[in-house]
Image (cartoon, rainbow, N blue to C red; front, top):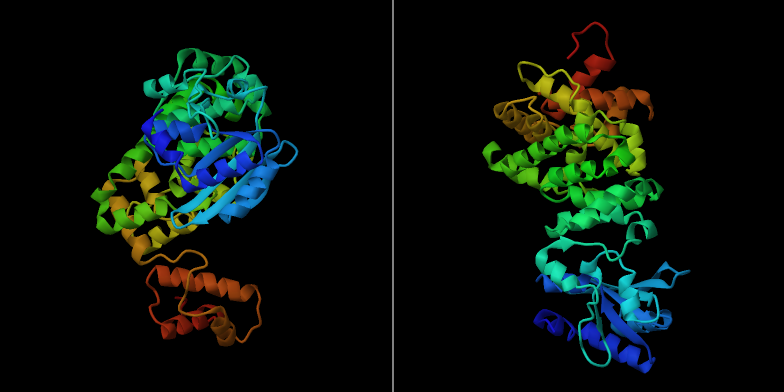
Length: 431
């Protein structure tokens, strides 16, 4: 028994689970990815439990004894989850009934050998590894468990690449050939599930390499209608985005610090600004049908809008001379994009490093995104203009935002004078 697994089995939660399963006369096993991660020396927060017999009674009792929260993942199939909030974060335990007549039959039905591992919580403590998953972990290989793996669940066609990307593994030759053969089946998978797998790839470095292999295997043809010849230059665009991010320090300390924070910001579950920026770079170069791609991946409104605006940046005419007006015009046209916008333009070769630095400086010190705080509130604008809530107030708000962003007004008094001239008179100069 690997020392890390033996130590893990002494976890207080697992001791409680062992006692609960014994009292209910249920055989249960720790299975799958958590054992893989332990063998790799990685931390574990999510634990999968396979139960011989109905797992509901066990999971509910475990939740009660550990102060966790029970809820169903799939009541029809008997899949449940217990979440325990502790000082070290959130520990998640997923329970499912054992498939097949015994644990070896269950493991044979799993996706990849690196996940086909189990350790019993009762009796002799040993690692069940009928498909030599530990050997593949040591060799850093993603290998299918059986010939039927991709027919049983086509999402595994994409999941293989997710494991390769997140673990730093490569896909075994015969498994990759099988992915190519079964690629058309991915059309049958739900967009939400495909999205969740793809964005785990997009969050990792080396995305371009993974997408090239996915293109060669035919998956991107099925998903987005792209040939390998379209995928390769688009993958290079993602490489260049990553290269710019790696060299953020060259743009100055403030830009590097704020840029890193922005790029890691979560826009939607599992989707960071960086991952969406790489996707935008990819889709722009391929000239893929953007609405269709967003729909296929079930991007939410906010994530879809950001990708759309980043793709739009590629078509905008950039001013030869940068001033506050041209900088405002660029960021306003691509709102809600922030610091990722000049980084993407630099990666695409549309601006120089010097121009990128200037745009970043403008954004950090001058630009106010839509919804940002202005010198006058909505109530103050209504009082100034003597109007109730109406379109005129919104128009005034946007005029003031532009004036502040371009340096035309700097105080509340200047803002009041500016709006009076713009909206309450016709004889005085505008602005």
